[in-house]
Image 1 (tube, one colour):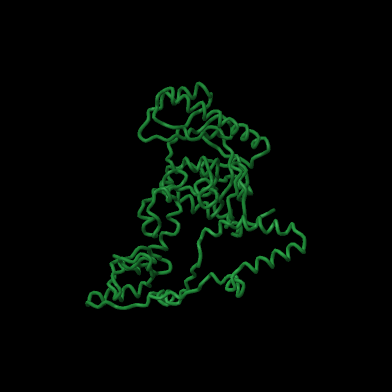
Image 2 (cartoon, rainbow, N blue to C red; image 1 turned 90 degrees about the vertical axis):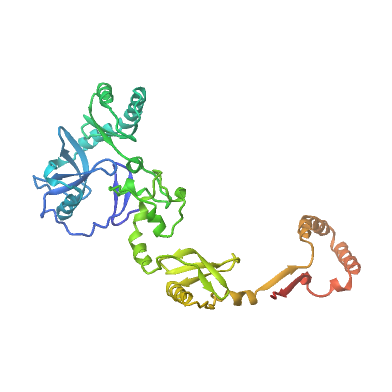
Length: 391
């Protein structure tokens, strides 16, 4: 099965989703800057000084200081330059290393061998940190393509003096060590997983910026204030709360600043739910929890103005009164436990079916003679009486 516009990442074995850049023209001749993705969502920028024919998805060998690494091209040309200016706050201090060449089979083989050491290294690294009594957690380990350097991602609440730990790592693993502190969101992106929506976590598939999210984002969208429902795999508020926030803020600008109780002819109505996209507010009459109704924003504003003038308007509660008047009530003329005798009757019918035709006819005749005349005439469901509900 193939998908037009979908890309597959061999390094993480995940589908990156729909490739909205697949239909854009090639602009690699406008700029020599390229964006290269490594393990997880880590991305860096390099220069294509040799004018190699690179396109998105190509595996390349890039220069690092020192050594080299293997990554995947994600952006080239005009878009890569724009992304570089957007992500890098101080470009003058950023070193753009060159792209050496396209990766060969031998380069990919060395990369996979180095990646195979990451799990074992992470377990030993966690044990070493625990032996030194450091208040930190090693979240993940990323080996470079040449296998001579590794990045240790760790989580810590405060500042940690890991100078002794680096010496232990250098002695045990015989590689260059780089320690990089991350937060809970970055850890979820490195580990990966499936979100409550059923899809791969945004932080592990495409999201690279992990800004803090406040609970105000959920409240402005009328979502549940429960922290358990709004928390993601990292234990923090879900990043997707920010995706539609601007739409809800724009829609909420038409609502009253404060949802007041409405004084109606039938009583006081209290708000309990708001639908920003439909521009509706749900109310319930005080003392009558079951009687709920919704009003548009325009209706609510009109009623508030009328209440200020001392007027209690009488509104049609969306025809709920009519539905109650025409509601048909079905009552059962008999005991509810009669349904418990169903199995017994089935057994009796089974015994009757075991008799011959002549014996069955005689049994039905005797049964009709024993029943009162009122029960032998008319439909069998006469015990169900339909009554019209009256107020």
